[in-house]
Length: 235
Image (cartoon, rainbow, N blue to C red; front, side):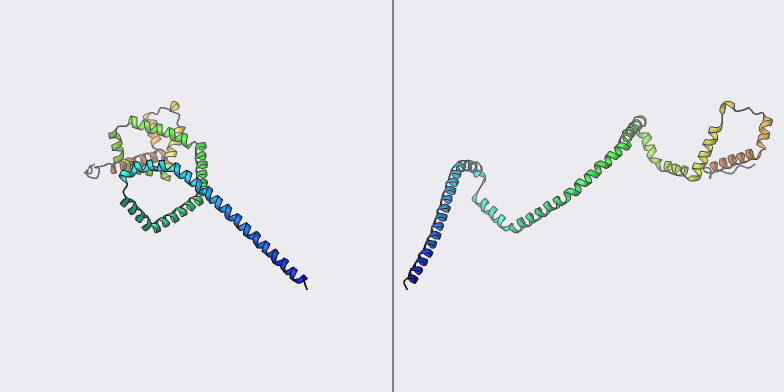
């Protein structure tokens, strides 16, 4: 009969001890927080005392240019622009992400460009470019402004001539002429008498050559400026 009340009392005392332990722990935590707050207050007070003279000096420098109305207007403007500031921060964050994503691509493009420039350098493009600069220097040194003006006025005719010369049939004709010229040994060209020349003229290849020369001269005369206005010569 007596064991039960004693047991209950012991349990209540044990529970009370646990609660007291919790209270003591809370009190210790409160003291610790209060001590940290006191230390923080002391640090802030010391920092504030050190900063106040410097802040007062800086405010003295700007006080002639600073009015309370200006500060109030600035604060109002900042409060009105909160949405804009937030949007700007979001855009800045997006730009930062874009730069982060684009950096590897830009690095790869730069490496490709460096490799291409190195390839061009090994092929001699830059060295040839320097030599072309010397060519331009020679052109500038040896041609006057009048020469360049005339060149600019006749550049269409020059390009048309070059275009005609680069046609396949013209290139073939020029190549044949060059080959024939290369085969001629001018040191061994024999002399022809009038009779020998007359006999040579009667040969088929010579007659074809004379026919070509006559046709060429006739067409050249027809393309000469002012030839169309000339009256035909009566035989």
